[in-house]
Amino acid sequence: MAAVSIGPGPGSGDRGADGTDRGQLIIITGLTLAVILVAVVLLLNTAIYTENLATRGVDAGGTEAAEFREASAADVSELLVRTNWSKPDAVDGFGGELDRYGESIADHRTHEGVIARVSGEPTEGTFIAQDEARSFEPTSNYHNGTADGDEWTLVEGTTRTRAYTMDVGIEGDSMNESNVTSDAFRLRVAGDDATDWDLYVYQPSDGDITVRVDGPDGTQTVDQSGESVELNLTAGTVNGEPWEPLSWAAGVEDDADIDDGERNEYAISYANGDTVSGTYEFVIDTPDGAATNGSDSALYSESEDGSPYAVESVYDVHLELRHHTPELRYEDRIRVAPGERDA
Amino acid sequence: MFIEHLPDRGQAHTLEAFVAALLLITGLIFATQATAVTPLSASTSNQHIENQGEIAAADLLATTKERGDLKKGLLAWNGTPGEFTGATNADHFSGLMPDPAHPLHDPLNEAFDSRQVAFNIDIYDHAEPGESRSRQRLVDMGEPSDNAATASTRLALYTDDRLIDPEEDDLDGPYTGSKLGETENYFVDGEGTEHTLYTVAEVRITVWQL
Image (tube, rainbow over all chains, first blue to last red; front, side, top):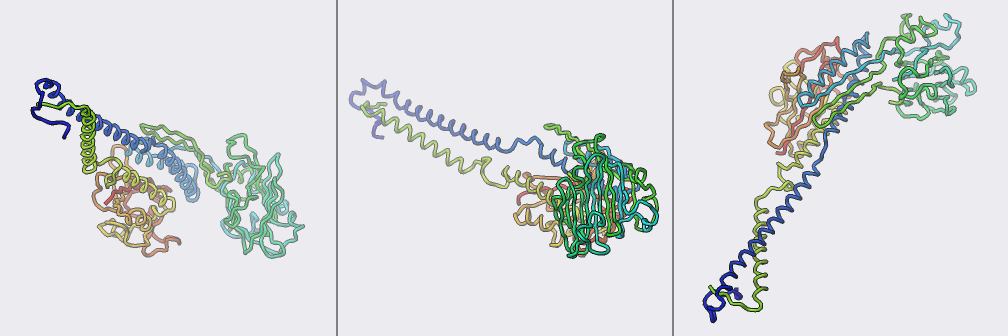
């Protein structure tokens, strides 16, 4: 450095005190600057690190709780369907199965520090089905045995129906459009103070199968080719495809959010059942409703080959869910009813 | 010691100080580049990789559970020797299932195996509080690293679920294997066919970078 020269020079005696201090000052200044810069670097680094930590997610376990709810609903729904199929005393049997499910889940979750609880109260209902393909008459000698003509009531006094599936084929001749309401197969849902909801299945002259709905939105029809048509009345599908007007008991059955007690009661009846054949099944929320309240109480107790039957079944279950972690306490009440109209 | 005083000396000192500071910073930059691992630098122990591994494992469990593949994977059990069908190491797999028809082969391959991510899959029976759960390995690729991530899900098994053989059975058709409720040596204990629910098993995946 040319600016700083070490060694004695002319006039050194005069300025000696000032000159000796200057070199030290420069070193101190340099070091101070360096320290300041290092401090700035450290600060910046900390800021970057904090930002990185902050964006790593502050999830308190809400996802886990939501997944717990979904998984429990799905499992209980499957358990309900399977128990209804395999247990003769479905309601008691389902209660036991649900308890064991809840205990198993609780045991598993405990190992991860979660207090989980699944408990529920099943609603007793009735499962009504015709498993063998035959006409939609209650018994084979139905026309001879009753004076009711060709209409018969499957259930009365029910308020909810779920998982109503029907596989219908046409028996007999094609039908003139003008005779449909009197001669075609008709499923009627009739409430006390509401307009009836009707579903017709018939074969018009062109050979297809026509499904017709008479509901609050008027008359709507859809044509399907093939020997038979597969209806899911509560899911609103025809041969697996969604069909908007097929909205089960629209205007007769109350919406699902009206719970217990205040719901409209209705009856389900078939007419001209001899013009079609096939199978059907559904679950109603009334215990043994058909067998005791139906217009013909013997309908389901007469054991005839292939005739429809009614058995005890679980309609729905009110679940109480609890999922407690140190960060989050989650509790919920849900209703599981697989195959309901609004489900 | 003697220092000359000239009119332009102050400027020189300032410059000198800046040069010194620059030298120090250069040294620092060099040092950080040479050694430090910041949270953002890429490595197998990166926190982001851990997070991603956990999410991928949870997603794999969720999707295979939804599609039924996870359950099929658990039901691909051969009762007579007591092993998973096609097992490559004792009663379990030592890596990805070699049989492409195995229901878990494709998802595991796509999510982990083809990306050089190792995974263990364990199945736990439920146990009373205070007791330890019994474990059955489905896939065992060794000891996980310190930066492994895990995810788990719970699966309900029913007494009328049937065992399957992915090599022989048509997995889209009806199964012909024995019912769980009637199978003697299935790897988790459960109820007989007089019940509906066999048991609830927990499936746990551990993933780590190779």
